[in-house]
Length: 304
Image (cartoon, rainbow, N blue to C red; front, side, top):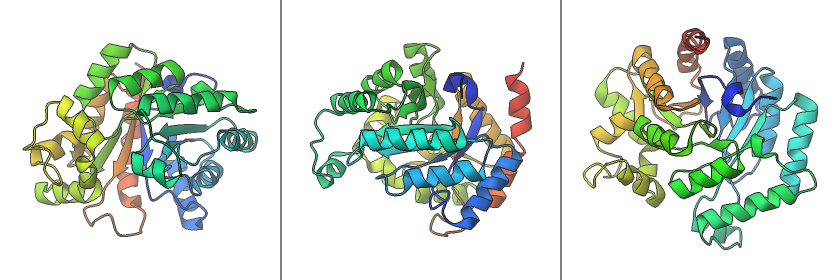
């Protein structure tokens, strides 16, 4: 990963909770298949950090051509020195194919770790200072932030490769790209439901991401994007779900990916939500295989 992340990441990759727990041979087999299909970016949530870096190592081994990104790891209870050492060890074993994403999460997470939440941007700034001061620092070009608002996005642009926003529309991407210029990476998360039935697709979307619409940070950002209290109801209105989630057939998903890219995104992290619900532990391999058929067309368009 000698070039900037903007250049090294493809048009889209996969974001998956199911790829956590990569000590499981079935998960590693799935990652190997994704690598064979041509996926060159795999994203996993960092959550509270438990086992996250171990999972990254397993995925790097199973998918030798892919960048693996933590999107994102809550900073509370993390040791900057240990993270720098772990990144160096992963690089030695697998090459520089790891991206570490960091987020401030919420005050409850901070309290659980016995730490003070403070002002989020200032808190994150101090965390980045600690990463820089570690014996083996996490390089700025190998880290991103989970950011939404302009102040955290500016911090990401100034001190990391960029940011990975969650629950955003192409309009968000366009506004931020105009604001920060061409250089910082903007890699939005995009939920996907491969189902053409509106009722089933929206139900799957609400089951997968609906709970987050109630979180204050996301509500505030969605309000900035023009959504009203009528949209910010539990589970989200149809209008909100349709704006945030790519549902339908492959052409519909491809259109939504292109909307983000045309708005200025460098990369889109696709999160498959299955119509049969999020509680089933099986990997969404059929949907991933379908999405893999889109890779050649996006790779071809990137060369023109």
